[in-house]
Amino acid sequence: MPDARAFSLDLTGLEPFLDLGGIEARNDLARAIGAELARREGPGADFLGWLDLPRTAFGPDLVRLLDAAETARGDCDVVVVIGIGGSYLGAEAVLSALADRASGPEILFAGTHLCAAGLRRLLRRIEGRDVRLCVISKSGTTLEPAVSFRLFRAALRERYGRDGERRRITAITDASRGALRALADAEGWDTYVIPDDVGGRFSVLTPVGLWPLAVAGLDVRRLLEGAADMAATCENPVLSANPAHLYAVARHLLYGAGYTTEVLSTFHSDLGPLQEWWKQLFGESEGKHGRGIFPASCRFTTDLHSLGQYLQDGRRELFETFLTVRETDPALVVPASTDGGDGLGYLEGRSLDDINAQAFAGTRAAHREGGLPTLSLELAKLDERSLGGLLFFFEKAVAVSGRLLGVNPFDQPGVEAYKREMFRLLGKPA
Ligand code: PA5
Image (cartoon, rainbow, N blue to C red; front, side, top):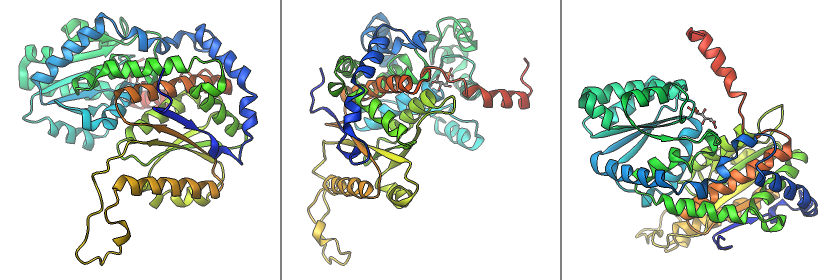
């Protein structure tokens, strides 16, 4: 079980906007949804493999993956991970959050758009450096990563020849379907499988997330252990003791009360990509059939100088979930000044993190005053274990939340619409 001090969810900021008794009254409903998920039943039951990953990811394939990652760490300066959506957001989220613990080759992400300027810049960044590619696509047919992969593969072939290219490509894809699988088998690349029953946005604990993170020197076993601890906690049938269910129920009641946008706010500058992962997880899982909370994010204090006005004073359809980290760095303090002309004398000797903590407390109080219900998630510190727990917490919460909303949280039929139009305009053969 995770240490209760390692992760906490505080609902006190929901009052006076929501009757907290209403949460308790959903105890049986949440319990029934939890039991349905545990029986692997209900809408999208074929895509519940992520529930088992904290346990099943430990196997011979993990050993092979860790060996391969060790080799990659020793033979390149830069790894280009090519994937979009769930095929890169989780790895980028953990990598950014744990940047200070990472080592080894630089990890770049490509295949996330179709913009020439950005791709050209990325191609320039690998010039003259020893490079590896890791191409990730569950379907194996997604346009953005496929186009980027062509470009980077051509650069790899030119540099290392056919044989060198073969040794420097890792493909992570479906076990048997898709163009990428066929290519990988034909070329003999090192491959890892994304299980059939795990959708892209739930795949961070498969090789999709584990391979890049292991190459970056992060301890993926600890990540999985953290997820396993959280999975055990989030099986608790008692709502008040089950943080994922509590978060799901609170959001659902807020939605019912007209709060249709959730802003995930953080005061930690390394958590931006985690917010992006969260937005995909909740947006793609819930936004269907004209329903769903719109997931937005803010990075403070930066965004207090752009969106702060709206949060404080705009339409009252928002609620805010703060994601904070308790561990602080006491060493970076405001230095003494010889002239004091900047008016910061009252802050001399105070740590940046202490000042930031006061900014958080002040912002939370002000937003509440302005009419925003708030929830607070706190991690005691940022490490592999806490991140694994947090990722699983959100996955479990969105599964429950989607079912409370009456949608299948594991499909994404709406994503096909832009593809149909784009492929028609591009003249893709049927
Ligand atoms: O959650 C999802 O399934 C999607 O966001 C996918 O991850 C994304 O579209 C990329 O798909 P693929 O991995 O098939 O290239």
